[in-house]
Image 1: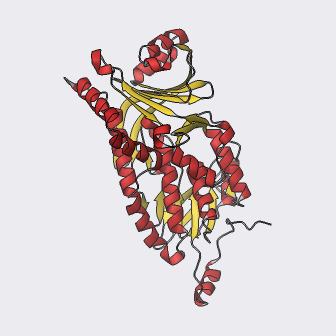
Image 2 (image 1 turned 90 degrees about the vertical axis):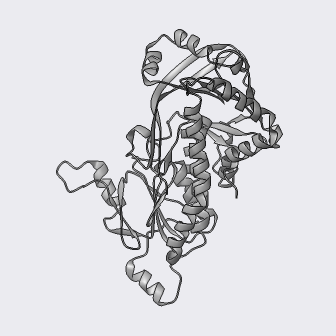
Image 3 (image 1 turned 30 degrees about the vertical axis):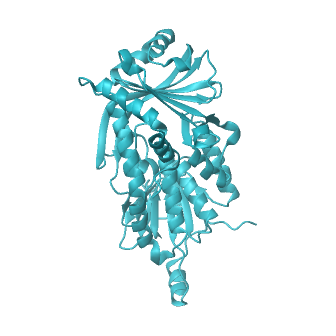
Length: 425
């Protein structure tokens, strides 16, 4: 039988006995959130041979609850390599992105410059892939079961800092009158007073549901999510088209495109109320010729966009990963890729330490991840806002920047490598 890495943490007496005997104590780690970032952290710790006593908590009622999530994710080639190494890559469900067209919708000649990123120029099979959230999560759940990682579902928890540890307690109060079944299950899943050397918070939620963090900006944009069919096969083409009101992203998904159309909130409501043919005509006017003629548009919903990030992702013995650390604008599709790189870096550091070394490892992690986070937070913020600036000559300046980037292969290559694999010092 495969030994599980998620056995219950040793009691205080057992740990004192171990310390008295001169043995190194394995760190106790609580992962809050069994989404892609939380599960990838647990799997990487397992793969690296970490001796950590690991427990994964999730507020979802069961493993099936999130598998029907229809969101389409953009994952870089670097993320694909990482997930494949974990045996958690849903290859049959993924659509490859082999080239990316970047341009702006602007009057006159300013709309002509474009930047083309191609996988063949980087000697890669693809620049990235699209996959449905539920498909990716299902692959990670299967890999976690194979690795013997147990997830405690229906377990909303809260984390309290102690001097050299954290306390994980049920978020619900099963003793109060009218306590729900979920509260009862939470109490069974996470005993009050359960201590860990480290808590990893990987449940972040959406921008409009989050408390405000140190870096906060409401872009005044709403993302319309949908599906677009064109008369020209996409052949792995993704499009990032910047408009004065926000970017339009087309991601190859099956035979069609997954659409992320960023517009002001009032315009989003107007488009959702319109007949599909009317919205289709409005979208067609924004698209580059490379897409061909738009034939059919389906809009599924919308959500507000903003930046909400922490300057530092560590507080004492608590670390935030993924959307718990930073929620980004979807331009360039970097949010989940950044979260997966965060989890990989943390797993490598935790695999090298015992319980006594957790604090030092967390300090190293915070500093090591700062450059990658800073570059991407700054770049996505600039792209989300810079193409909406309506200053005299701004469109021509942006056109010049696109033309220069298109002509400068070394600069284009450096940008492409960072988007695919993150900051490498």
